Length: 155
Image (cartoon, rainbow, N blue to C red; front, side):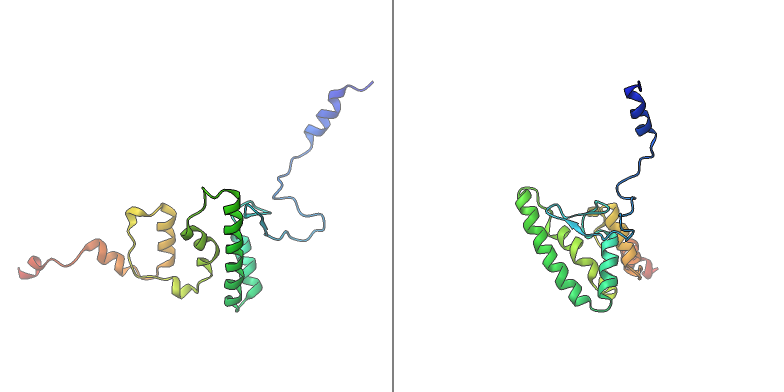
């Protein structure tokens, strides 16, 4: 008679694969869609739209970004309604929701800014994002150096 633990040993020796890395049964790539009402990605569990979903959406609309913005505005309103229904006392800030759904769709040239933010109030990720989005650092250098000293010019 076989011992009951031998079957358990056989199961324990099988390799364990992560849910995210398993290919779908059809062999097609997984589509990064939101899991409602939490608005997390069904594949990677990041807040939707995750990075891959953003790439897929951009690839899908190609040059018609106004259609993308209309679609994402609709999705943002649905997410706000779902998240409010789940927990009205712990909602993301409007700025966070806007950044998550719409800010990344703006044309790259309009996202560039020469204004220097208040670095004391920014998180590390926000500071890195500012440096990534800024081509001209002359405003930052002028801010750090300060205005010219008139006493030094008089000498």
